[in-house]
Image (cartoon, rainbow, N blue to C red; front, side, top):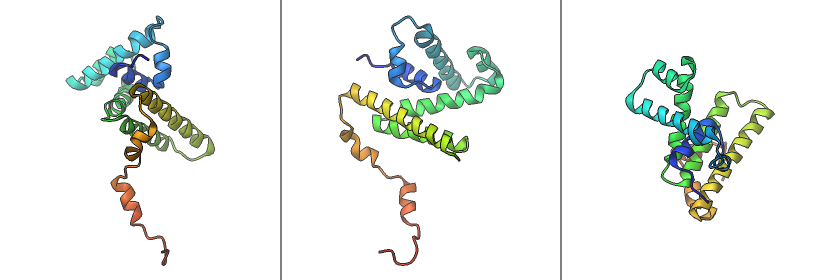
Length: 165
């Protein structure tokens, strides 16, 4: 299986495609996946490195200036996910981004919860894609996936009521 390049993975993240779906559209003459989306990612990367102003970014990727912040945020999240040190950390970061987005959009009803479940499943599919490329089993990353953060440790200090030994 051909490995997606970093730029292609960034494009998949920025434009909301799973890695497998993005790969399916490569090498079949689909200019959107092969050139346009990666070019926009290049532009967003260059804009970040060179601290372009909003109007320059808007002109370069042909969007309304009011949407520049949104696209910059998508790019930064994509970079965090794609540039993670391991596939397990990429998965954790992707799930975190999906949950943060769902909470920002008011995770309050059954439909919004189902949309979040779908997004987590997409993250699992991307993790599976990366595992296939690495020829690793999920169990290889078991410890990484069970890594507890300071927030997990703080939750353990909660008072659960009288004497629940």
